[in-house]
Structures are given as C-alpha cells and as structure tokens.
Length: 205
Image (tube, rainbow, N blue to C red; front, top):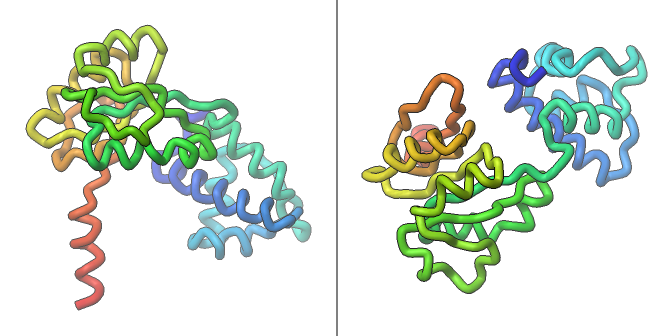
C-alpha cells in the first residue's frame, strides 16, 4: 500500500492523523470531512482523495468514526510499533534531538543509538548510547535499522550518507546544509532552518 501512495499524500495523511489524535484527546467520536479538512488546512475534496488511499470508510451525513480513522491511518503509515532510528552527529542540534526521546516515542519512533566522531563529548542528559562513527555500519546491519537522522557538517554529510545507504538505511532526515545524492530507492527529507526562515522573512517585509 505504501508504494501506491504519493509522497505528498503521505505527508498529509500524517497531518490528518495528528489532527485525529487531538480530537480523540478531546473526547470527539465522529468528525465530518469538512471539519477535519478545515483543521488540517486542506480542501475537503483533497482530504477525501487522500483518505481513499487507505480504503473506503465513513458514512455520508454521519462523517468518520475518529478512533477507527486514526487506526486506519496508523496502519497505513506503518506506526503500529516503535520504528528504530539512528542519529548521526551528536553535537548541539543532535543532542537536542536526542533529549526529545519521549516526544519521538509518543510519535512511534525510538532513537536506538547515536554516532559521532567524538562520542565521549555527549551531554549527560542524553540517554541513548553514543558510539564512534566506525561502529555505525555494523549497528545498522545487526539491528535492521532503516531510518537515520543526519546532523553533521555539510563537508562530511555526503560521505556519511553513502555509508548509511551502503549499510541498509532507506530513509534519511537530513539537517546537513547540502542536497544529498542518493539512489532512487532511498528517501530523503531535507530540513534547512536557514531556508525556512528566509522563506518566512519574505512575507513580513
């Protein structure tokens, strides 16, 4: 199923799931497509099309059962169990992400280990083990990890990315300030804070 869902639709499904979780916490039992679309910031037609990738459900005039829809989206997105993730680069940004361990766990992700060129400099507040970069490939292979967070300088990012892909990593959340070159089968989401701020600044001139 995951391969048949367009990448942008997968992003929106994750957004819908979080909206549904807020509704569950607010004791809501049903929601209309119009109401859910409004909360998610999309058009109702777009929402119904996206949900169609997960099957046909919901009743006209009654809307969607909130708990059932959340469960279906969780299954479609593969979040029925904790997804192991490794983090590479335990500097300031990497350590901050490592300290968000409980927040990641609530979303279905577990940072099982981190890797750094100087692992002994890790913060005392970081619970995840921090290993030398030389142990990264074997750890990925031995533990079947498929996802990585990359928080390293741009000068070494591509080399480390190549090692990650070679070890079996299939998806990378990239905080390094460069565009990574990866095989077509590997997914990369780039997070460039400077670009995001620059984009926002355009609209406040």
